[in-house]
Image 1: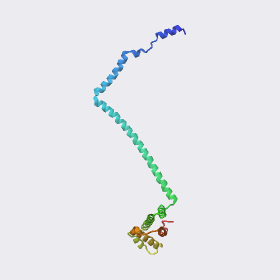
Image 2: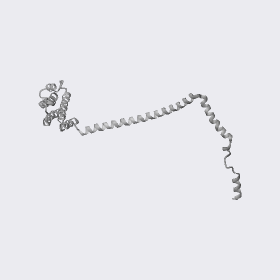
Image 3: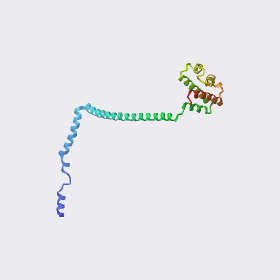
Image 4: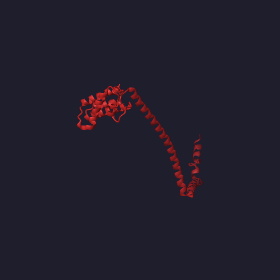
Length: 202
């Protein structure tokens, strides 16, 4: 291309777009801004505040609806998890065949404290009371229920009486009644004989 032609084009081409130097263009922009402020002023401060509050209210409503859906989903998942956890625990107990209450009595009996041996005897006596009550034997307490058992219906009734008397001494004499671990084990063995006959232990 002819160098003279290139020079001619550079000299004749404007450096800036004329629209940026157009005063009508800039006055038009200013008028748009002025008219916007006039619209707000014409409506007054109440119009502007109500507009802002409405926009804020709509935003909060949308946010609350979204959170409600999220919370409902989270609660549903938590409930499903709790149900599955309960079912798993129930199945584990059913499949293991463990007698949790009897295991607790044994743990108390094997503890080093005499206070826990006493609790083991009291707990075993509570189990006996529940078993007699489940068999619909009348009476206000274990003593009366044992008296109301027909002769021959409970072969281990003597063991039940002997163990229950130890329990009564613990309850009535308190710390004045000396209970060794050996005596506690013998008492629990008496309860065990009764429990096996009543089907609490296999």
